[in-house]
Length: 90
Image 1 (tube, rainbow, N blue to C red):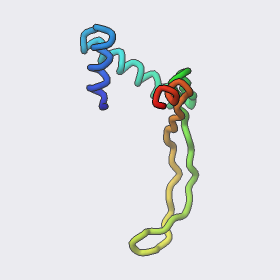
Image 2: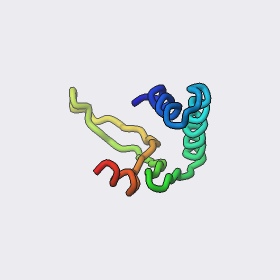
Image 3: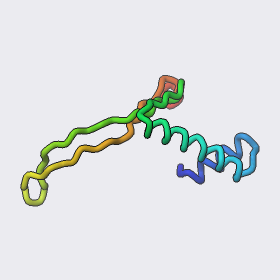
Image 4: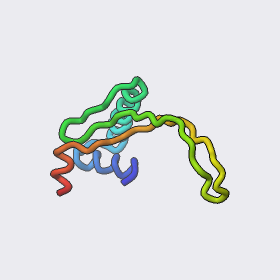
């Protein structure tokens, strides 16, 4: 499912026009993104939790040459499914 499929599903379930559903989906995604940028955790009870993770810089090896390379530090988002979602999926 991509963003347009999600918008169509929200529009169908709520009987709202696709334009309004697109605004709603955009607002939710924007709120989640904003909270994560501020360093906050987004916890949706029964669904799951979005949290920022930091990976420190490390050393690695180029698989083609075997030369040692530096791997830069990164920041990414982690999602941990909640009990309600786990139970729904079986």
